[in-house]
Image (cartoon, rainbow, N blue to C red; front, top):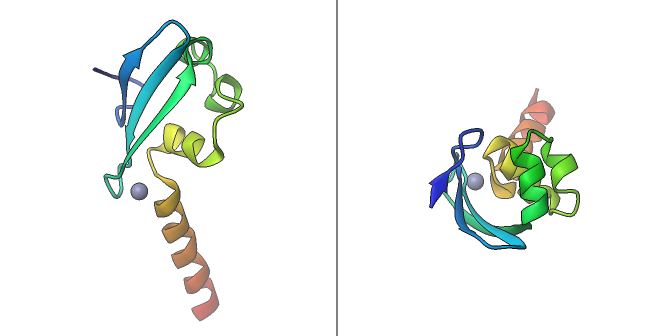
Length: 89
Ligand SMILES: [Zn+2]
């Protein structure tokens, strides 16, 4: 396995001819998320493309995790708290 320099919370589990399997650990809650992307798309991302350009078909929550290292559940918690605070003020 190799850790990615741009996104240290993501590791490459396996690289096949058509598919790269990745493992992402949320930097907030440490939940492990495994997902696969196409080797072509991964190559584009490695070459410097933005996540949304390199992985247009990837689930939105996984793209967020890819970009920020924060999973969907943690985003909901953050957003939930933010909304609650806004209401209480
Ligand atoms: Zn999380």
